[in-house]
Image 1 (cartoon, rainbow, N blue to C red):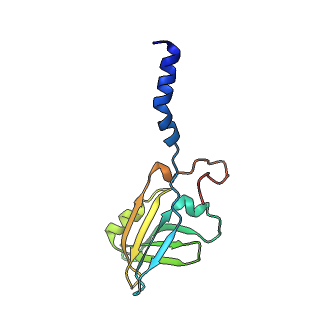
Image 2: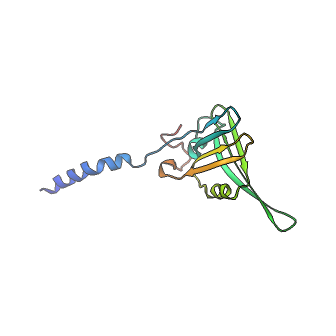
Image 3: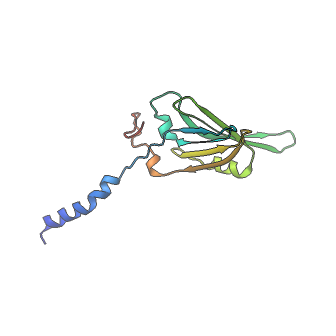
Length: 145
């Protein structure tokens, strides 16, 4: 086989991999309330940050207070806002849910649920390469809302 033929063969085999490289999965924030005010919110941080509006956001945070008796109070929350300006918020002191909140990293897809009392009942996140922006030079990443 000629060297040119091998090059063409390799190019044909590798082309699908190059086409799939850099795949981006936009996941705008969505919020769904149930009749009892419980609900679910989800979306990825990059899609929220680079949305075509000034209201979309999603994330979680943890706060720790030192108490006078030398103990600590741990409290966490998740919040989101969608393009229609619907807001969601839940909070928790559950140690396992706080551990998940602490593990959320930049560019994550976040999902959380809450009960009718506004307490977080489920928190999940996913850090996949397709949630990372393609460019970090201040321009809006291609393929994003």
